[in-house]
Length: 142
Image (cartoon, rainbow, N blue to C red; front, side, top):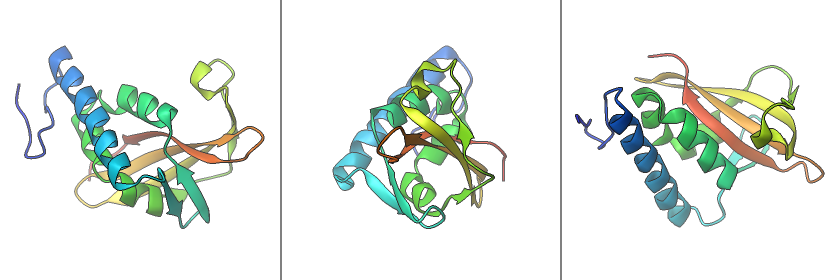
């Protein structure tokens, strides 16, 4: 297994993807230690984006598929603070169990030099309207 300078597996084998899942989970644990409120103020939304269990679960599952998406997670605070809303919030997909607690999904983007475009998906909780990071993936190489 080949690792980059951050310790992230660069290949596409099952073992590489498992290693990236572990890397993402460990990164979130470290991030939560440094950010005990588990939220970052987003300039575009003019509101806090919260990091919850669903954030880690969904991002680990999606971002671990590709090295570039796993690398994007290392810029979590920067992405949460600076991503810009794209379009209007959409209704959740009733077929996706993980989206059941949300009433709307907000698609956001952030451009990171060297990585390209990063997609941040934010869920708006039913009732409380709390904004929760749902998923982060790199969508375009820089």
